[in-house]
Image 1: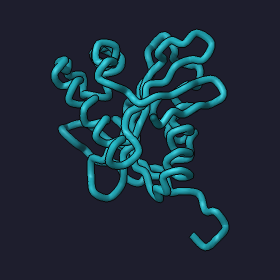
Image 2: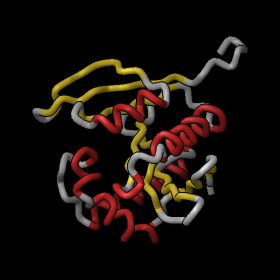
Image 3: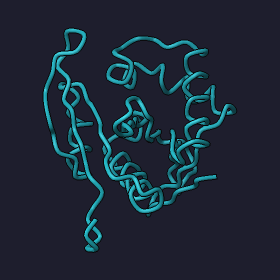
Image 4: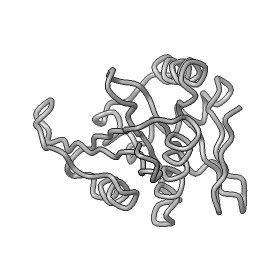
Amino acid sequence: MNLLHTDRLHLRPCQLEDLDILHELWYDANIRRFLFDDRQISREEAQSLIEASIASFRNHGYGIWLFFAQQNNQIAGFTGLLQFTETAPSLIFGVRPQFWGRGYATEATLGVLDHAFTDLGIKYIVADVDEPNDRSIRVLERIGMSQTKRAIVNEKPLLYYEIYAPSRGNGE
């Protein structure tokens, strides 16, 4: 089932049964501000995202994981990879505000990157972030992503990042 574990978190793929909690999470003003350009998404849109994630796990071995704090088993956030372009999967993540500042986004995304590079053989991952989103920019930089460009998209500044799989010393 593509379960992942880190020192403090366990991650599992989101399922349709998670619709209520994910819709609530994605509807939260602190999350949607940067994830959905502050647009309130409907339950139907949330369900479509979950269905796309389920299909992505089936087809690619990755999608959206929910991550839980091991100490209390509460949903702390989500992270994952989705294929928005043909070139590379895109990293996404978000943390419930009550869990901000604990390093969970960094830890969870590193777990996903390790799975992608080591288990799935993915060579290259991208991400984009709204320029005012300092918290997410810090996460991307902490996990080793490099900024590649800045653009104005829908009248808002957007930063693009990338990371390549680490070399394994065998000519790859």
